[in-house]
Image (cartoon, rainbow, N blue to C red; front, side):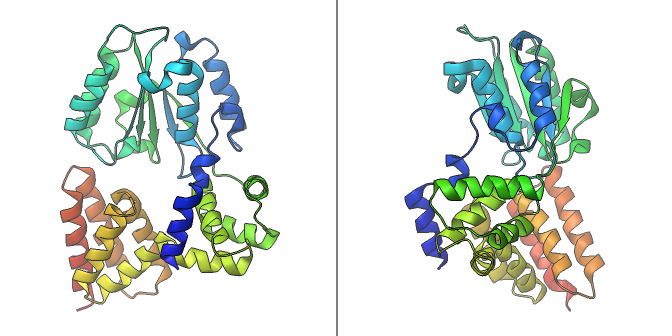
Length: 324
């Protein structure tokens, strides 16, 4: 059934991309932030560097891309660099990609280049220090939009150079209305209980909610029963399985499944650790505090620049030892 869902996604295209807002006015729920940003970009020359914080799937990256499109117009593709800092967290990425792109080169009718750094809070402190210099040196012709789930991980000199906007989670009513609109456009039958179940599973993460709705639509109407079946097939439940395997000493199997999630399904290492942390609270384990300490230790190691694959393999091995 998993494959059937993935085939369906490929055939029909990802709804989360199909219905991604292209203008600031289309963003769901963040009314105050959007009106502040719209007045900020009326005269782009006055626009400061921006920092967006808040939990996953609430519109931070989409808002950044809308700003780029609204300011740079037809040139947005050529003059916007979008990077996910959690994939390449070190100083190399800053020097090679950011520095190269931020160099001044004869620019057409645009006020500046825009550099969007997603998951910027996953960057090492060395990389952030190098980034701070680039932000200072290129102030005349570059604007940075930094996106972070946890703003306290961003060094103070960068924070002080940005106007910060905190995005809120999307309330139930807003999310259900938005999902209903998508269901109508896709001609999918959806009942209120099914949509409420999607909201409950997604915990205010609209991206996760839309993906779960599409996965549910591939097996039938959006009903509570079908949502539960689909939620069991989504990738977060695989993290629960990985935790159980590791704790029962099946290190090889848990590592293979972890590698598959990251390499094949594109789950970031930081998301894997977040889901693993949530999974711990679903199982009633006598050594819960030890498990959480192990996860925190490896989260820190990866943050300071250690090889994620090696560290996550070691994490699973250490969890395997706890049972003994």
